Length: 376
Image 1 (tube, rainbow, N blue to C red):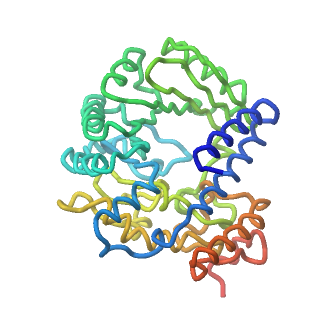
Image 2: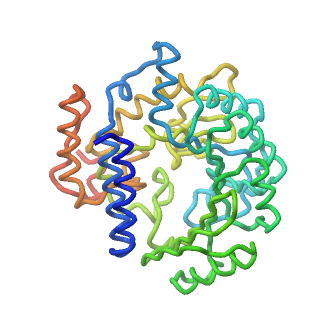
């Protein structure tokens, strides 16, 4: 089947599934399907160090595989949340702005390849904490990469009704709103729905769809020109340990590969390029994971992706126990029930594509006890 036709068939199947099955069942189906697609598109050039390859090959590799570029326009976040490393790193008083010239160089490079993926402004900052600078950077990105989908993630504390039109005017296409309960409140579906309803009233826009699971409520809002979504999660039962920093979420070893260094390109406010969204350059235990520094003039996102990030991709493509700080990260991991079928699919694909040297099978046990980490 032609890939484009298959894409539309898959979308139709999942739309039908949404009407028939519980939300958590459909989410599991989508999750497994995403893994299957990722395995089937792995190619040797993603795992080889192409530092010395021609620039057009590096650009093509980036364009074909990266669907999300995540940046920060500044460092500040006004909240301190128990599930976030900002609980141990002070971002409330950090007013540092990301260098405009550096970001423009990134946008220019993305424009060179007509990047059609998402440019997400989020990371560990609150984008709207510096509204004027956010608008400037969004407008610059929109001018330099008109084909990209510009997105921000906000905690909604600064968000006002009139900002929606302003954000649309500077090129924003996707607005993701994270809803958090007040201190002392215990998450429930009732609370989550109430908070979504209050947000709809605050912004003057209707909720057009609502999806509930035992640990989340996600809504879609109606607004012309911007896709607006919200999520309210039960962080007692949802979260990852963010590179072994948030110990309350450390529960097991990672089972599967990690797709992040393949499909995402992550830049901190200071120009540090990180292998994924869970690692950050302002945490001491993560500093060794900094891949490159885009604040250095002449540094190219294509050189970094094709070169230094290839080593991270090789270390994340198998089913073996991952090295620090990824050992216990469960971000977008596969469930134990998926492992046998996906491991078999991976082994077959890697052998067929001449990449068998990079395949590492699952450990005999589906989950190795944490007490064995670091033991002989």
